[in-house]
Length: 288
Image (cartoon, rainbow, N blue to C red; front, side, top):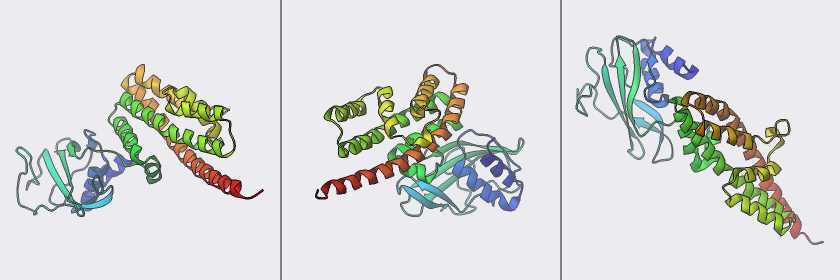
């Protein structure tokens, strides 16, 4: 169990902290992960008044509130129990509404009092893990690919995780090559050199892409003279085509941390190179 899940589980040992523990569980735990907890004898204080969630409509973090009347005894869907007076095993329904756009967050959690464990059996919208804000900003729309890769890892689908990570890497390298093209264009590269970079950008051959990417990759990601972009891509391909789920998941877990480091390093390089290209443009406009 991860440290984050351990922290959530431990919080249930205190009745006063059970609502906070449920909040963290609802926000951050994927489906079907069984969490051993010390469930309190009363469920009335288990339901958080609000959750801070990434709203899919607002595209930012928003407070979601539970707008249902307390103690109403309503059963929103057939067969789903809501806050029974006496604790008993079964599915509890949680529903929250974005305070800005009224988007809905719904979650079904199975409480097992005999085994003292809980796990999600359903969630809408789909659960995706949180990622560091700087990584999310840098990846833009492609952050969804990374989140899906992490979700596959958490649920044990290593082959799917490798596929999402490889797709992310393939998409991320093209902006790097475009930057290389702009820098070389401003520094007087030959038409042949520029054409070769353009062909690499539109090519589906990742090896040709990494050859050019090595020219602009920061020294911080070069290990013993090797560009890791090609090596990571090769391992992800192995994970997709030849490994079982468990081994592929190990590959994906090991590659994830390296990929985050590379993305941060490339972001710094990208910004520095863009500033350099802009400076060269100014210099070329100075009279000689």
